[in-house]
Image (cartoon, one colour):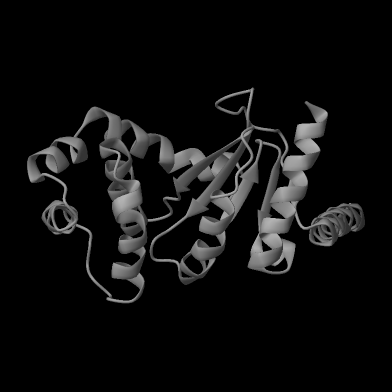
Length: 206
């Protein structure tokens, strides 16, 4: 009986290792099951990130250049990952900026404030000051920060990463079917290449 269990365990390990090697050879993993997308008429690309992640910060310039050249059939979505209380506080800042329509005004500055200036941007008051310094009305900030919309997005974000099998950031999901990361692709630059290849693949399938 013990021998049979050991053999089964070995087969599982070999299968897992084989799957990992395959994923690394192509630069991505295939999600099972595939997840539904927001708009079936578009190729959906989701980036999972955290403002406190130095890898996400170094990836941001590459991503920004890529976003500027997006094909019309691609929808890009930023998705803050929530793996701890601190991650949640930063995610709430992003969702508030999104609700206010000021992501372009604050996103890069927020990364800079966390990564380079080592600012504590966690409480409502700290975040209100940060947003006001970038031209946002304080009352509008607080209303958005405490809104049902932002609260709903926070509740969803708590489980979103696990749905896609995301355990670290930055990670990119392509059309609900594929996941790529720096280690899988070989580098952050190659992540972009993998994303482009999968967009082409999904576009051809449509």
